[in-house]
Image (tube, rainbow, N blue to C red; front, side):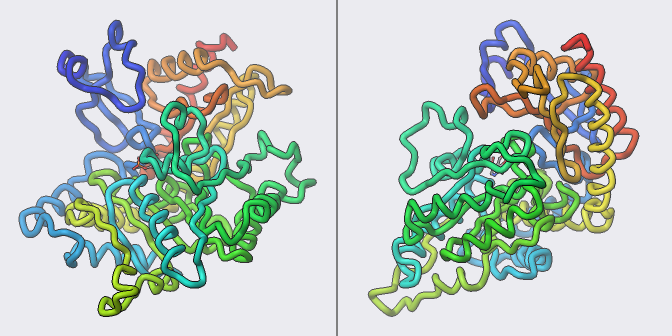
Length: 453
Ligand SMILES: Cc1ncc(COP(=O)(O)O)c(C=O)c1O
């Protein structure tokens, strides 16, 4: 298997030269929060499967059984027709989003965001009220996926490097992290410029050309950036003033990750469109969704007999959006989240994790600790005053030392020039206090080993 990996696999997001001298880790088993590699070594996974998605932990037999039963009965029919798991899970999602009305299924976070962009673009052609409003705003440091539309809407320069030209009609606006405020203000004495100044950009670019704005409730891969509480109400107010739909990308934050069911619930905001993936089926199956308000759905309710509007329905399809196993897994995963009170555990254990991580500020290299629920990060710096990031080589060594301590965490990875210095933690929502302690003490040891502190 080790040779097979080396000879046949091209891994995601990895420079492969290192495998000439180094063996790739091959994960063979998982139970709870613990994964075992092919050499029999066990690790505490503080990343829920690397990209924050195995919400209910590994080894859930009830999900496997539910999927098995559904696959025997009816594995697939294209989403042009209904299936029982699709109906049931759509109902469940709308129960969780009472202000929204329709659910559109697909397979990945990128795909869900593409669907949202297609809705915006088509609406800008077929709706008299929205004529010409085809452009989409996105925020510096946010990530929305790997496909061309999603990449065009991504604010991470290194992720985009060498892949242009990107799609026309995407507009960037500044990020909102207080630790590196783009307006050099301090929260408490600022006027929430990070949100308010977006209006200047809208006015300069032309509100009549802008149809939507996509944001992550709390920026994930960009470094666990949690906007202040005033941010979304101010931003959404500006959007509403110019009839710009807010697309909330809940791909990472949804399903309890931040200690509430949805990330945007931490704010007084009611986005028009919500996209989601990852934790939807706890990544036991691949599933994503776009959830919209009735007023958006209604734009696409055309008269098929009218030759002028015959093509005005949402002309989009996703072959695997018709698989029934993902919705079945999602229903069971959501049942587990509810029955085991995992959103509350995320809130409580998340607060404990943040408190323990804050104790690491005794190390000079720990510049900032931030997070919400079971979604936390540490920004490492060489100098607290200047906030100069540690080097990428130091980060790589730190991550290696942490794995050596038996804990897998995440990091900002080839996202920004000179700013890939943030370690992140997003363990599955079943984590215990003892496991939080294990993670934090492993990080402390890795810091001491790497920086000799
Ligand atoms: C916030 C956010 N949106 C979208 C995506 C893309 O999801 P996928 O990798 O399933 O296409 C990601 C992936 O990490 C993400 O973090």
